[in-house]
Length: 417
Length: 134
Image (cartoon, rainbow over all chains, first blue to last red; front, side):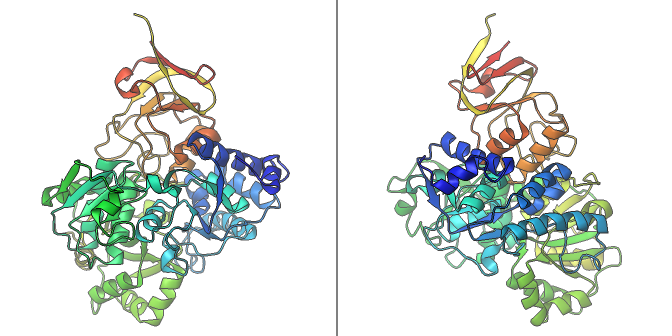
């Protein structure tokens, strides 16, 4: 690959060994995948904020070295959630030492030039890509959404390669950056009636397992399907599989028609999704057998304004059971709008919380304090039981259902199976 | 019996010998594997199995990009597999293998999932570009 002087300097170790290793890794990934050149990216979305909670001090050393390397992010760089609510962690009872360590990563990334977005849904809070834009995004739910809903082009990046992209402003051109890899590979006929976001999550979870790394083209999805439903579908597809792009006939920008989605050749392969397949996904994700829930968590991916409004409406005039905590996780900007719209007040009056910047998967309290979480997010239902974090082994079991079921359970203290 | 030799593509340099642990399912290192390096995913082919010291043979990585940091962490603590034999490595797995210094190969001339069985003695060597079974 032809490199410019600055890129060669980065590679030669002019900014230290950490930057050198990041560049080497990015180029190696490009070479392995047959990239012939680097392309300029319109934006980068990093999950490096997760380094502390996932890899502890092991990964934090990299952040520290990077902050001191003297480099600045050349690309417009947005950040994934952190493991604390940056403005309200004290009130939420986050251990100070934990918050302090998280803030080291936050400060390092902001010093490098990252925008303080701290959300997995950057497209809901001020930055949405356009069709054909090249991106280097890490957050898997945002990657698949940017590719599928907006028609932008990004591979499922990993922090170390995306950090290199943030620094040099480019990404290796392979995979989903190239039109020939964006065509559908498998046709999916959705016969099941999907009513709720959790139904779309269940569909994504079932389908992700079936198609692995393919590009599914879905038919049978209503044309008026909402953005939130597609976010839930996208996030789940990227959880149980490594789906990076999907098309929905008549809905998404590269699939006005089936021939367009498949690049002319309609494949014979067809997966049929009926009520039984949706039910199977629900049953796989329900790991809790008891009905006494102690946590209800919404917002994975981060709750949209519409979801915040729906939750507020469901909680209007109600009181959450004394044994249950209810938390809605969202971006800072959505929280501000929800506050001004009165949704936060309604949720708080019922005894719930609206938490910004973080989520149920990343906050330490999830693991220390709770036995049984109810959620309408297929992605959270998968990750919460297995994702042990710093200082606490995972023990939380999960029940997965609709928002209404979750709110009813929050009020009564019991899940109705 | 003569040993079986698979030829593949190098993802991360190195040599390792160990006992194979074969998974028919893809693996998510975030969520699917806990801090002790034990597979905890509900209904997974390797549910309950420890990865430490094994040559892990599996189709691909799935799930969150945070899997890179988890695998890196497990490697730093000696709880990761000693080598990865994967049908198709993505960017997340490639970065984890390089950063965690875990030798890894993919794109083999034969299907490693059918050529290798759990418990087989396996040597992965990226200098010769081969995985030797038995």
